[in-house]
Amino acid sequence: MAAESADGARVTHRGGCHCGAVRFEVEAPADLVVQDCNCSICSKAGFLHLIVPAARFRLLSGEDRLVDYLWNSGVARHRFCGVCGIKSFYVPRSNPDGIDVNVRCLDEGTIASITVEPFDGRNWEANADALAHLSR
Image (tube, rainbow, N blue to C red; front, side):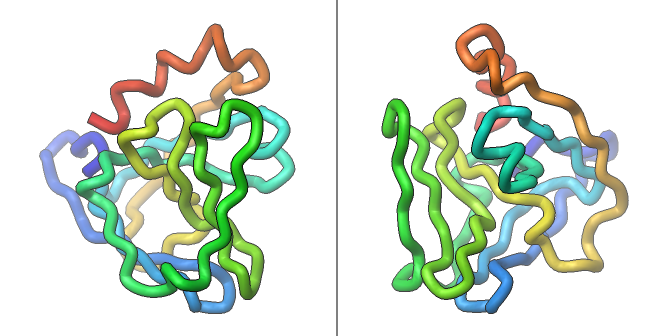
């Protein structure tokens, strides 16, 4: 999954959209390091980014409820619940081989701490490479 914690331990976090139609699980440390992007879509949505390799993410239910939104380069695959409109995860432009989970959509009980790092997405081209390692 995402980068391991200092002791190497990962936990299975579960989460989903507001109405519960979309449910997923993601393996990541209990102590999360996430990015707060200031680009137009992330800042308007309040998305807190946890980027993981695709193999550490599993969609449990709701594939038939997801609606895709593609814009700009078309690489990012923004996936919204067609019932409640929440984007709980998507395929990010910075890491098309990974999944980007909105930490705000994770269920309570498995997160020990969250460290939020600012990410300057308004200056995408100058900063995107800083995220590449997150999906490996």
